[in-house]
Image 1 (cartoon, rainbow, N blue to C red):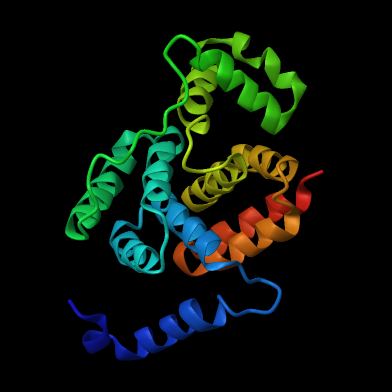
Image 2: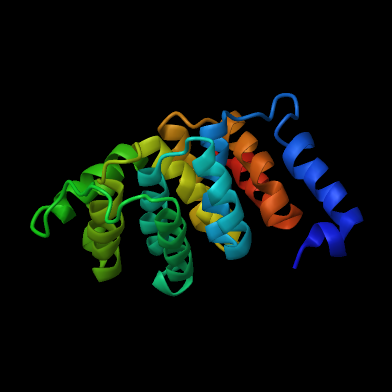
Length: 226
């Protein structure tokens, strides 16, 4: 259904806010590549699959890298689960095929099943500090977190570590109810150079897609970070 026909007044105000006012707000701007990355991650987080399809097309037309799209979808599984990410991965494949992008893309894996835990722990230490070196020993979930989340995905190429922490922030912010984890990843972002000012700009650019309550919760986590 064409909302420009059925809901013209709404579309006038939404598009003005989302596509003009927000992206151009003084002091809250991001470069196009970072903005698309944040918005696409937030749309996965809030389960906005139909809007994700629209934004994905715009991002690709603007030159956003196909490999980055895939890497974001893969990493999202650790924060939302395959049950909520599979529809987005299907959309990615459909859009890529419609645009003549050959699948599968070139592999980005840098670990093996034998060294994924070790390398995952190294990434955790790099992001969160030396206290993470032994954290994986606290239980099997902690071990899975190190080997699977960080060893299988954070170690992949296609996105750098700061970008991976930024999209994790967006996944957590957008799904809501994850404020303890969101607060931890605010600190992880800051440790990698994504400072509070940058994260506030990320929230601002995602707000039209996730709403005010989750945006305000994210801002609180940022402001409370030490």
